[in-house]
Image (cartoon, rainbow, N blue to C red; front, side, top):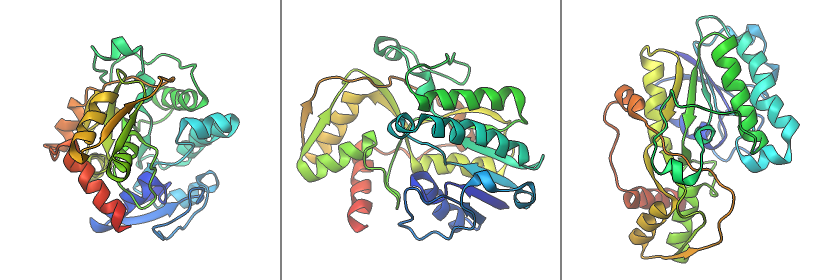
Amino acid sequence: MKVLLVGGCGYIGSFLYERLIESGGNVTVSDTLARGNPAGIPVSYGSYFDLTTEDLGRFNAVLWFAGHSSVPLASQQPIAALENNCIELYRFRQRLPQECKFIYASTASLYSRAIESACNEMSNEQSLVEIPAQNPYDCSKFAFDYIQQNFLRPGYCLRMGTLAGFSQNLRPELLFNAMTISAAQKKVVYVRNSAAMRTILFLSDLWSFVKALLSQYHPPGVYNLGSQSASILGFAEAIAAWWGAEIVVEPDSPTYSFALDTSLMRRICGALELRTLGEMSADFMSSFQRN
């Protein structure tokens, strides 16, 4: 299978690139290198905006893990976020061959709700997603999801929980990653919004799902992806206990609160590796320190 990996040098892309190569995939990378390329991944194309119908005709599958991928970045560049996450992505999708599998990164933050509601309800793929007003990131993601589902050929929309785990192009600010680094190095875990719920998605579990989509047929549509759900304080307690760290509670701030029903993901992937948060934290630091 010939795969185009858009955003192949980023946090997610650099992790998936290694796994795709290890599994014998024929992988071509498109990346603007906005976050650099610490893994030294070979890049064939720059911006995916510029790929032509002829360029795209050679691929059996496209994995899109690019765009404006964080609230701060999208808030700093709202027009660019709309173009990158929606308008240009729509045009790109139109240029893909009819038979090409299109798998793209959406976000589970679209399910966010009041903290007390998220504590009692798991969002599944049929759960209501309301038009968001909180930031340009969510607005751009919502807009493309709506367009993809109603105006384009079927594709695979991955509503991913908060990403976690080590990659060569690390995002250390993400919830699990930040807590682990602080617990291991400073023996303290800082917590805001203790009661907010969150589902995290380890990169290894994302790869298990992507591999399943590439290797066999599953109906296109929306898929919730997550590894473990807990309150933010619950994650902090598990990580702090592993490292013998102190928990410091800081003032609350605006945040997401969601918990995902991932039963559909698990039916497709089969049994995912069950490891405690402490064990995953230890594995993360082992990779972090080696690199």
